[in-house]
Amino acid sequence: MADHDHDHSHLSDMEIRVRALETLLTEKGYVDPAALDVFIDTYETKIGPRNGARVVARAWADADYRKWLLDDAAAAIATFGFTGRQSEHMVAVENTPDTHNMVVCTLCSCYPWAVLGLPPVWYKAPPYRARAVADPRGVLADFGVSLPETTAIRVWDSTAEVRYLVVPMRPAGTEGWSEEQLAELVTRNAMIGTGLALSPAEAAK
Amino acid sequence: MRRPESARIALAHIRSIPRDDDGPVFPAPWAARAFAFTLALYERDVFTWPQWAEALGTAIKNGQHDSDPESYWLCWLNALETLLAVKAVADPSELATLRSAWRQAAAETPHGEPIELQNRVRDGTAQP
Figure 1: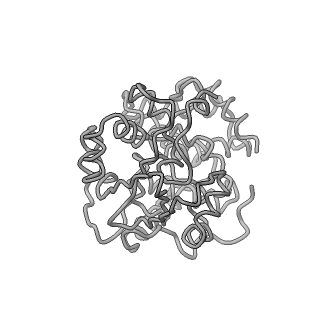
Figure 2: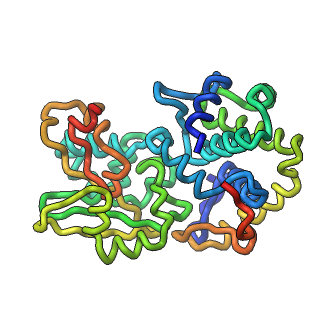
């Protein structure tokens, strides 16, 4: 990475070229950015390495790794050999029966997509951020997630310095599963806390 | 949206597209965006798939394509820019100006904020 200045944002040459092309094609009416977002979201599970799912699966399977991940996520994630500045400054927050974690984000240039996958389209909507902070339970209900009243919901706002990975609760009925099998249950939405990990029945669909 | 259908046609015509059982796979978000532009332009009849195949083939021959999936999509992007110049859709000098603008926008955006290009995209020009 030639640019290591942490005072301003960074875009790779590829990102610059694609953004320039998009601006021009949008101005000329060939593409509609909102429609592009919707289309690209259909490939959500097909973009990038989605490293976070493997990280979560190992944390479920290995108690020592889980502890390390919660203590020092950047180092624990790096042990997989994932490189790149995107997993720097990561903090892992764990869901428990008492606490559910949810992440909001400005979608700056350092969004950790290699770990979390493609950011959801609705992250771009300003009302989402405000509502997630004011009424997280209502936002979760919109996503079809209802948590017991006794579960507190904690909302984390990603910043330039800290990016969050939610470690969802391990689904029931997965005792003895391999890390590879477990990783299949870890969705993007589970890793940002707007969803839960899939149950074995849901994953089989 | 006809895009899923267009994606299916693209996969049938362009055998080199990296894919799994469900469809195309992308190493990074920018590659998915470049793919989406291509489908949108095809839907607007800017080029045919045989024309695209020829442009992509040339870009791959001239490029640094190896087993790295990023290099495949780099060739894809090269082909797209070249073909759009030929079709008089995207003038290379205009693209160069826009790249500078985005580079400058990144440099002027504090770390942690979304990068936006101000006062450039005029309202009402985009059509679905």
